[in-house]
Length: 83
Image 1 (cartoon, rainbow, N blue to C red):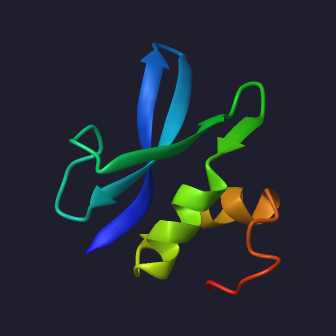
Image 2 (image 1 turned 90 degrees about the horizontal axis):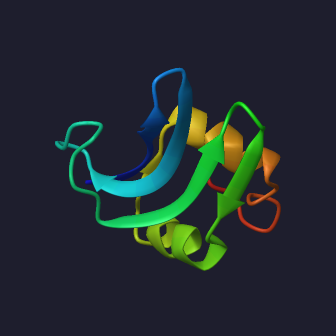
């Protein structure tokens, strides 16, 4: 099963997170299938590759709670309902 999950990057005390499609059995810093965006909590910036995210959601990938909230704030779920 594939999940859309956050992967921690950056340096100490300045974390940024990549939004990645990754196998459920992989660890947080494990090998990802594809990078589909990033989230910077310090500057409150988000970048999403919408076609890639929609592709994985249509194939059955489940976003984690945090990724779901980030994508909802980016208004990705207005057209389609993925709850």
